[in-house]
Structures are given as structure tokens and as C-alpha cells.
Image 1 (cartoon, one colour):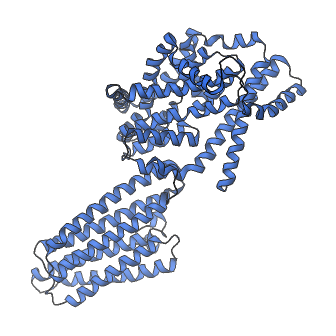
Image 2 (image 1 turned 90 degrees about the horizontal axis):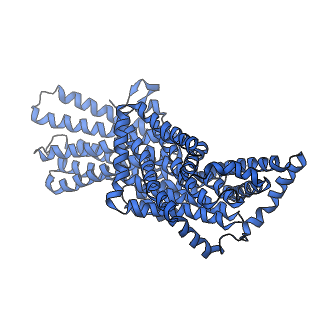
Amino acid sequence: MPGVARSALVVGLIYIFLVGVSSLEAGIKIMGADTQERLFSAVTNPIAGLAVGILGTVLVQSSSASTSVIVGLVASGALGVDQAVPMVMGANIGTTVTNTLVSLGHVRQSNEFRRAFAAATVHDFFNVLSVAIFLPVELAFGTISSIAKWATERLVGTSGTEWKSPVKAWVKEPVGWLADFWGQVGAAGNLQGTLMVATGLAIILLALTFITKNMRSLVADRVERSVNAVLGKGGGAVAMLLGLVITVAVQSSSITTSILIPLCAAGVLSLRNAFPVTLGANVGTTITALLASLAAASPNSLIVALTHTTFNILGILAIYVLPFLRNLPILGAEALANVAVKQRSWAVAYVLVAFIILPLTGVALLR
Amino acid sequence: MVLSFFRKGSTGLDHVVAKSVAMLGDARHSFDLATLALLTGTDPDIVSADIRETDQRINRAEQELRSELVVHVSVQGGSDIGSVLGLTLLLKKIERIGDQAKNILDLAENGISLAGATNIATLSEDRQIASALFGEAAELLGEADPDDAAIDDFTKRALTIVAAHQAEINQFMTSDRPGREVVPLAIYYRYLKRIIANLVGIVRTASEPIPLMDYLDDGATDTDD
């Protein structure tokens, strides 16, 4: 497909994605307050919220998708900012499962696997460390959401009021068509709301999948050229910026970080050079939730999206800028990779425990 | 460096091919200087630093381009895997030519000079022919879609030269002349033969299926012997 046509297709897909977010919001609103209360009471505990964020992201293999859904839920009023923030942090952790799974593809060759697994899990260690520092800070002082609130007020006005988003107006009509369609089919009340939510979720996932696929085709040459330019030559800030740019372009941190795994496995990129690229990807991936918040009527959705961005920037400032803390994710990833190379089953066990069993236990015990 | 994301420029395999052509130019430069020292009696010290520096440049380019090939596969997927494997072999062949040029310099640095050899006219002519083959190979390598007939013509001529060099080597091995005369000649022709065989491999990379690379006659003849 010619580049211009593919670009036009991506613009169309972004519009469809925004329709999906708005449809999700509308569906939740159609449901009664009681239903909303029953559905989301489970995540009032922040650790449970964190676990839900991890599980949801592992399920869809995309933090862009899961955070966009969270933004939609916040926009509908079903989820408060306080509940959403731990979920967004969980999404950050959950998204790292993709490159960890990619690294398992190198399991047959010890040295290759050691490098690949370390490159994948350095992202995990950074995100867990970041949550370990900032979730308690957020719960105690609300620091991150306060920064996001401050930025939101500067951008769209006071929190709690309806924000006249022009994007919201653009997507209003197709969302109305969806509601009418389910109404004509005979669905009403909770059923109609559920069907709208399901349709919204399906649209978000499909649109994001195709946006990512098409953007990857569109920018592959540029990605290749810039990775070659930066490989081992640039400092941490340059690598971080590259991770951010690529992720914003392809709308997926998983793609950016997964590209790094074979490079590290082959020894083309060192763990220390790959690490800042993953941090840039962490920030870059927040663009999708920011985009989703444009289709929402409530400023709270923008607060949550900006919280995601702020959290990732603060994580870099706190962990990467301080030399002592900067080495922790690297040392942790190297140690885990050494263990995994000696006993390959530990690598699989790590994925199962970190991304499925622990979050499931968290939800089961703390809901 | 991040700005390269937003700029236009040669990408992927095109870039690797363009750099390979430059590497081949460097290899030719080394070959010309090394043979100059060996065949004309030029002081090897005059060309030594240049040849070793050029060899380092070729080695660095090979390492960088190998990395670029891995990046290409990581970013673009495996659809170009055949070309990537071919280019990996091609880069190694160019690097080997650089080493062989250095080996010719080693002969001169060890005090060998063929300037006074009885067949110096033939040696000089063979040197010119080999040097010209570098240029032809670079031209064919740089073409986006080289003509099969041109590749076959190059291969035919180069392999004829390789066979002639092998015949010379065989003659030197059974010659009654003193070893100090024929051994350097045999070694030099051996290097010359290897260099030309590598040039054949470089040119045929674009047209040969991966399993048959460096083989002719459906795999029966090893051009890399």
C-alpha cells in the first residue's frame, strides 16, 4: 500500500479508536449506578487495582489498550482517579510481559538467552522499582496525581466540570449510531450498556492493533536508520529520546522493546545501551492514553492519562538519573538472567508468577 | 542522531550494499599498495601504515554492517533473510581480501621482492588484471539489479584466471629452480588466486541462491577451493 494511503488509513483508524473509547464511556454511563458500583468495587484497594492493571495488560498485551480503557472508564465516572492511578501503574508492569516472552525464543543458546532475558527483564525491574517508590508516595501524598491535576487545570480547566473536547463532538455521532443499533436489536439498560462496552473494547483493541501494524510499516525504515545511528554511539538521553520517538510513532512500547531483544541477544546492543531505550518507550506509550482522553468529556480522564506520563517521567528522574539506583534494574536483570540460564524452567516460572499468579492472588485476596 | 528518524536517507540493505562497495574500494587500495611494494621494490614501510589503517577500516566497517544487518532483521522481520545471509558472507569475503592484501605486504616486509623476477612482466600484467577485476566487481555489486549475463561473463573470465594461477602454482611446486625463487612466487600466486576467487564470490552473491553460494554447476564445483 502506498505511504500516503497508509497514512490516511492510520488517521481513519485513530478516529475509530476514539469512537471505541467514547463508546466504552457511553456504555458504562448507560448502566445504572448500582451496576457500576458492583463492577468496580473490587479495585478500591490500590494493590488490587495494581494487580488488575497488570492482569488486564497481560491479557491484551498492550498498555496502550489497557490504559485507554482505564481512561474511558474514568471518563464515564465509573472509576475514580484514585482507583485508576494504581491500575495505570499496573499496566506499566504488565506491558513488559511481551518482550519477556520474546526473549524466551532465545532459550536454546545460553549466552544469547542470558543477554536477551536480561534485556527484557531490565524493563520489569525498572517498572517494579518505580511502582515500589511511587505508589506509596502517591497513596500517602497524592503527589503524581496532583501534578497531573495541576497540568490538566492549565490545559482544560477545573477538574470535575465537563470539558468541551472538540474530539468528543466529532465522535458523538457514530457512538450514537452504536447505541441506536443495540437499542433497535432490543437491548436496553444494563444489557445495552454491556454491549456498548463490549463493542467499545473490541473497537479499541482492533483499531490499536491495526494502527500499530500500519505505523510499523510506515516508519520501519526510519526506525532502522535511527537505531543504526544511535547504536552504541549515543548517550542515555539520546537512546531514551529514540525509544520515545519510536514508541510514539508505532503507538506501542512492546514493539520498541521487542525490537531490542534480538539486538541484545545477538550482542549488537549492550544491556546498558538498551536500558534507556526502554525508559523512553515507557514515556512514549503514554501518548495513546492522552489521545484517548481527548475523546472523553471528563477532565479526570486527562488527569489519569497525564498521571501515566508523569509517573514514567518521575521514574526516570528518580531511578535513572541517580547512578546508584540506575544500576539496580541492570544488576537485578543480570542476576535473574544468570539464574534463568542455569535453570531454564525458572524463566517460565518467573513469567507465570510475576505476570499471572501474583496479580491473580492480589485480586483474589485484596478485592 | 535521533533526528535521523525524521530525515530521509538510504536504509537497510541498500545502505549495507553501498558501504560494501566502499569496503571493496578500500580492499583494492590495500591490494594495489601491497603488490606495489612486492613487485616494484618500493620500500614496504612507505605503504605499511596505509595498508594496516585501511585494513582496520575494513574490519570496523564489517563489524558495523553486521550489526546493521541484525537491526534490519529485528526491525523489518525475516522476509529479507536470504539477502541478509548473503551480505554477511559477502562482507566476510571483502574482509578476507583485506587480510590477503596484508599477507602480500607481509611478504614484502619479510624482505621478499619480486621486482627482479624473470617473469616480472607477467606478474605486473596479472596485478593489473586483478586490480581491474576489483573495479568490475564493485560496479556489479553496486547495481540494484545486475545483469545475469554480466555476472556470468565476469565469473567465466575470473575463474579462467584462477585456473591459470593454479597452473602456475603447480609448476612452481615441481620446478627445479631454487626454493628462494619459486616459493615466494607460489605464495604470491596463491594469494592472488584467493583474492580473485573471493571477488567471484562477491559478484555472485546477488544472483546465487543461498545454498549454492560459492558453488557452480548446481553445487558440484567449489569456486572457493
